Length: 259
Image 1 (cartoon, rainbow, N blue to C red):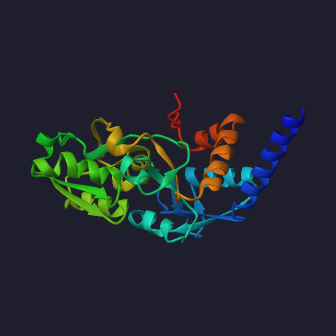
Image 2 (image 1 turned 180 degrees about the vertical axis):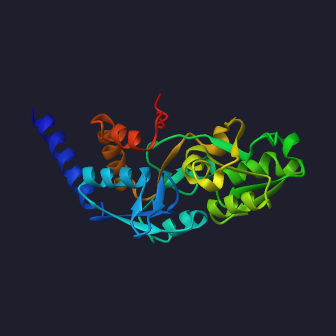
């Protein structure tokens, strides 16, 4: 009994210390240009799947959420510079990124797809894309994939600061296709008037080495307590149904990647 009490006391003490080391306000870095994950409304408020998840996680941690806007390709340097505490902006957990930062457990998993004009017969293959111009988000895993497999075979891969710029150039005829995360493409382009006449083409792209095993919350290597607290809160909202409720608000399929 004496040993058990000592262990219990140590665990309780550890929990108090860990809780104390989590900031009272958790600042999440976000690039709000990717519906349905994150988008800025006309009144300046931020909404989306990731935003709802972040708020639910903060509620479980009994912490306040603050959202700090940042361009996607500068997220990791900004995190390291302590401009915010974590990245919650659909960031894929890749081997390359895990050399620089840590991640929470997986939030979701959504494949990459190529979009082109309907009936163009363009496919996501090196042969089909040779001599074609392909738009990608700068700093994204889609950029890495396109440059690795297509640019080396004669495709012109054009990075953009944000995905809307790529869609604009696609509609203007300056691009033949764009490669992006599928769920974002549906809400951000295909379901809008601008996307009329365009469609996904070819199969979903899978490459765990480049695309990773899903998207997670990015954290500094040293912030172990915050990582543990976020993972604990994420597990709680998955077990109590909050995650599923949020997911069904934005998707008509299971995006968790857990099945």
